[in-house]
Amino acid sequence: MKWINKYSKFIPYLYFIAVIVYWFTSVNRNSGVTAYPILLFGIPFVWQLIKPSKELNFSLGITFVCFSSYLILVYLSDLFNIVSLSSSFKQFIIYGGTFVVANFVMALWMIRNSMKRAF
Image (cartoon, rainbow, N blue to C red; front, side, top):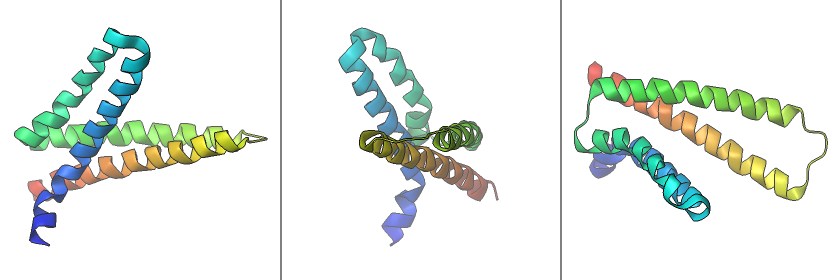
């Protein structure tokens, strides 16, 4: 249990790094060399793993909460405007919703970690 409490603060960073790596590999299959700038998005998260900073942690958390809130609004607006759904599109909506909610939860977790360290 002590091990889980010690390393649980790194889960949001590892999640966002995994999302960036997945995004890179999927774009790299189609676009090739032009996908490499996507890896630059992972630098702040790797930096937080190497040398944690309260300010960077809080700013990353706020940025991704805003981004995730926007994605939730877009997701809900798209969900309510659909009349007929195919089975493949229903599966896409489930995966997309899971991704959006996971982003929001991880961003809140990052803010919680920075608040916990501040007080």
